[in-house]
Amino acid sequence: LPETAPTALDVLHSVFGFESFRGEQQAIVDQVIAGGDAVVLMPTGGGKSLCYQVPSLVRDGTGIVISPLIALMQDQVDALLAVGVRAAFLNSTQDAVERDRVERAYLAGELDLLYVAPERLSSESTKRFLANGKIALFAIDEAHCVSQWGHDFRPDYLALGELVERWPNVPRIALTATATDATHREITDRLHLGNAAHFVASFDRPNIQYRIVPKNEPRKQLVEFLTKEGAGQAGIVYALSRNTVEKTAAHLQANGINALPYHAGLDASLRQRTQSRFLREDGIVIVATIAFGMGIDKPDVRFVAHIDLPKSVEGYYQETGRAGRDGEPSVAWLTYGLQDVVQQRRMIDESPGDLPHRRRMSAHLDAMLALCETVECRRTNLLSYFGQPSEPCGNCDTCLDPPEVWDGTVPAQKLLST
Ligand code: ADP
Ligand code: MG
Ligand code: ZN
Image 1 (cartoon, rainbow, N blue to C red):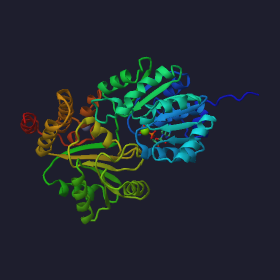
Image 2: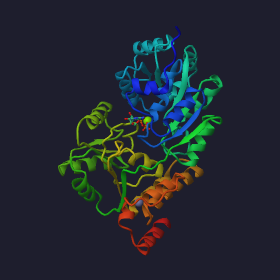
Image 3: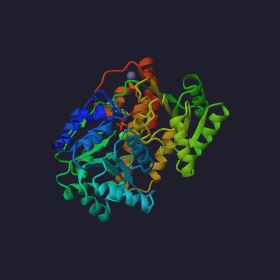
Image 4: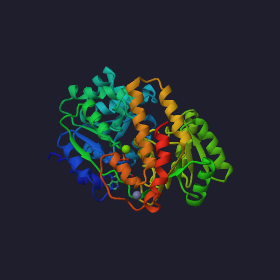
């Protein structure tokens, strides 16, 4: 008797052990299983991975997942292997023997999912190799990396638009937690997803409380916030420079807080150790540059604090989105002051890009300032940036303690006129 393919729901139950699909997962999965393309905008923690993992298991062949961070591939593959999914990755960390083993498994049709670094797909030899096996779908994770003027551009993503020419009949699904219209349009255009179905989830994270306070003595304010509200909890503190990361981590340690620094200048094995301690131990506070966090799936991060102004609302949203993935109450705390604005304006003026690039960065910064300076609901401001209207939330700082309007506009005008 011919084996019949399992349904998406069968796979969800029997492989992943979940009761039901969440939100639009079912519709997305159906679209891809039927062979259609999809563009998925869903906040961090929304469940994007299942949107391509389930179709990869239902459809014939291997799901090819393009994922930008080599460090995370191992984790994702380990998690899949643990539930019996035949998964592997190809990236530069492997030696020839390992790579050969993975390639042979793929060609023999023994893989459900294969994670590939984006730079590999721009090489003709990789494409030729992939063409010798059967591809169930292409999943382009963190698809906002294709946006040249966005906050996380990766040049290798541009070549992914060509996949459709080589594999016109293989469905493609692009996923991101960045939701602006501009990014959405760029993903659709640059990845040649003109015929895709679009799925845009609500970007509200109702369990996250947004708070933005004026910066006086940032380290002292941070210690106060952490000891009052974050005591013994896992959290992330973001700073812009490695220097600030080091100093802040030392300051927190001196105040009895279990803090560890993390930035790209630290040794890779130390970073790996720090990351696994954060995932496995309770109550670790990571002080980091934005090099930390993408793809880290720790459900019980109780707070995300920023002691420097993020460069964009997209960045702020992504970073704060790492709090409260388990749905429990969590806090996004930010302190900022005039010196942040002056410093960032200078960085923009001195940045090597051309004029349009500087204008773009400047617009990103202005939107971030508007969020900081708003006297209305923070959540409403944030969601309206992503084109999603909402009522005042009753839970952010401005809802709970409305600022006096005349008090806020003068400093705001001063800031905006520098
Ligand atoms: P994203 O990539 O959108 O940030 P993930 O795919 O990493 O989110 O999923 C976030 C968490 O939610 C994971 O722990 C995942 O197992 C869980 N999850 C996703 N979909 C479901 C579902 N339908 N039922 C239960 N848990 C789910
Ligand atoms: Mg993800
Ligand atoms: Zn509010």
